[in-house]
Image (cartoon, rainbow, N blue to C red; front, side, top):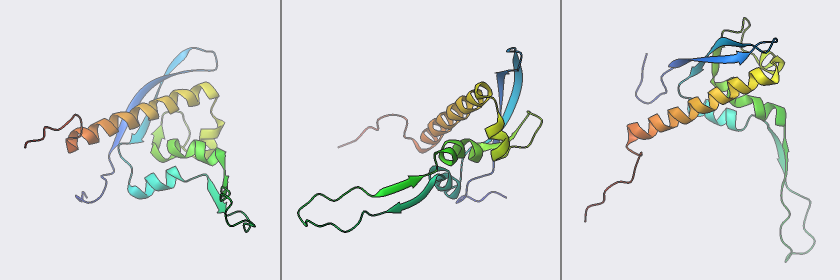
Length: 140
């Protein structure tokens, strides 16, 4: 059921070609979410953040404050965006963190590039719907 205040759970199928083990391009498809909810967007953006702490007490009140120590799980951060957008694929296994990590690098690169292009396309669509595509005329 659609609600004007919430993201519709629409998906889009993207047809791709990825190299098989023999190096020959094979047709594959991925199903991606058209748009993310605010919760999905924030969860994806911060998936790898683990902890943040302030450095110990400063001795000299006039000294420049030291940068906080931020701990990031880079693996979680790198895969989170694609895991958030991917709903299904034609690779013969479910989309899970483990299966995404088990892909050959050249196959992952094809999927990552397609997800990136999809996100950029959807951003342009959002701008077009909101009228943000070009400069607006200002009347005096």
